[in-house]
Amino acid sequence: QVHLVESGGGSVQAGGSLRLSCAASGFTDRRVCMGWFRQVPGKAREGIAAIANDGSSTYAESAKGRFTISQDNAKNTLYLQMDTLKPDDSAMYYCAAAKGALTADSFLRTMTDFPDFGYWGQGTQVTVSS
Image (tube, rainbow, N blue to C red; front, side, top):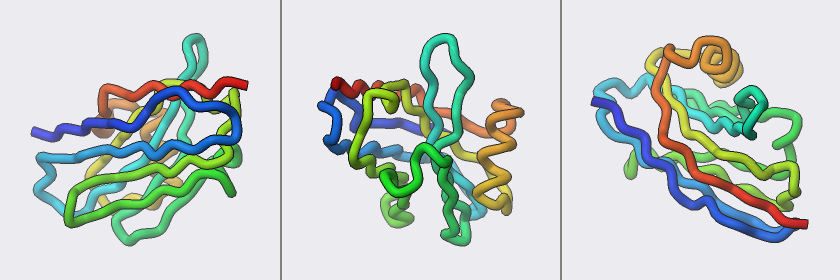
């Protein structure tokens, strides 16, 4: 059974940094694409960044230049380093994963349009104050 557990959220002032972690377990296939999404109450879930099993990555425009996605395969952990945080970055952040040889872009699109295609963590709250 696949489990994704996020950690690292919290409250920070604008301009600060946070690193989110997502511990993954239960995957028996190395062909897994993973990524980060965020959601504000009343708004649609937004794909922020993703990394494919070949190591290629993609970012939403809102994340480019400020967020960095990475993974430690030995620890089965996905990270999102978030720098220069803004109040607009405040949201619940979710880790997601899907099996298959997806590109990072297609993973974000597919998980946005078809959330049941893959797996989700329970989320970790990020609050950025001005």
